[in-house]
Structure formats: C-alpha cells, structure tokens
Length: 169
Image (cartoon, rainbow, N blue to C red; front, side, top):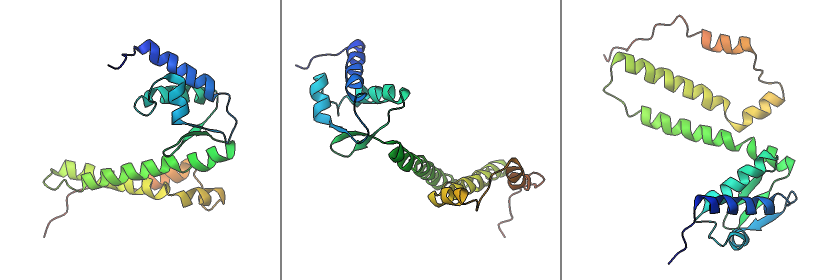
C-alpha cells in the first residue's frame, strides 16, 4: 500500500525543497533523485511539489530550469536572459500556428464569422512576424522601433476598411 499524503504534507515537502534549492549557487544543479530522497516521494510523479518550490524561489528572484532526465539547475542572470528571452516567443509562435491551423479548418461560416476569422489570421500573422527571435536583435540595433504612433499607423490602416466576403466566382 502507498501512503496517502494530505495537502499539508505537500506544502511541507515543497517548503523542504525550497529550503534546499534556495541555498544553491548559479550553475549548481540537483537531481530528481536527490529531491525525491529529500521528500520521500517520487518527485517526477509529484512534480507539483517541485513546481511549488520553484515558484517560491522565483519570488526571491531565484530561477531554475530543467535539465532533461536529470533534475534542475539554478540559472545565472546571463542564462536567464538568454533562455527566457526566447522561450516565451517559441510558445507564442506555437500557439499561433495551432490557432491558425484550426481556424483554417472553418469553411462553411457566415460572413460575420469569415470577417472574424480573417481578422484573427491577419493579427496572428503580425504577432508571428514580430515574435521571431531575430526581431529582438533588430530592436536592439534600432532597425525596428516601437512607438505609440507606429502601432496607430499599423492598425489604423484597417480602421475605415469594410471587410466583406469575396465572391467565389
């Protein structure tokens, strides 16, 4: 039989992991096995415990990343910038691609729905274009500048357009 753990035990386990990982220096890593030994539970199966501990550490500006099939590593400030400046963009692009693929499946729709579909696809395209990693370098090198006027200009060009369904002929 396996021992049943209550919510209180999970909190205690998260706190124990947090106390351990907050003392780690940038570049240090700890294995899932060590974390499992610390809590007495399989940290892979009970990953919510580690997630809670990492969130506690994040509140103290301590950031960890996963080392595949090993454990976690405390990131240095340079590693945080390198990894976290690209990771969210990859998730955005993936979500946009999935949304675009799903929207493209809608064929038999009303004119109003077609307008919403096309507007969404257009916006997804703009967001996808600006979420490419090379755009960060272009912003750094002043090749692209973002000002309130540039956004007004970009989206204002659609303000007076009346979108209608094209004839299929």
